[in-house]
Length: 66
Image (cartoon, rainbow, N blue to C red; front, top):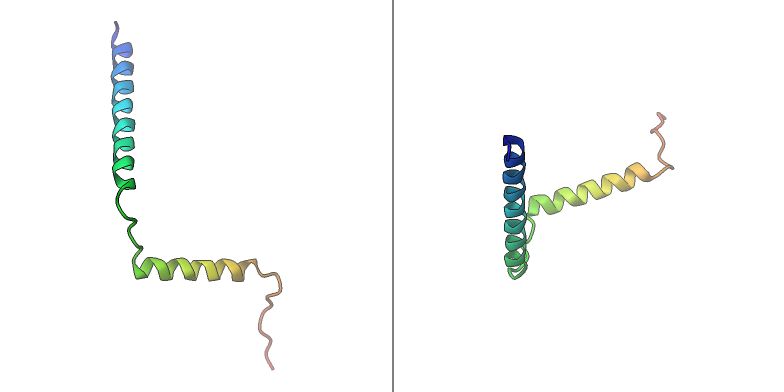
């Protein structure tokens, strides 16, 4: 077995370990109650949602002077 084949096999083994670890963590976190987002995150998401609505509104026009 040459160096490249050995390196490839080690990389695949490591990748399989990482995938298995992630699956274990996902399974263990499923049993825990969901974490509520912070107030800052909640407000930020709402501000972004309002901005998206405003940006999507085609009827907006510039304010005119009197």
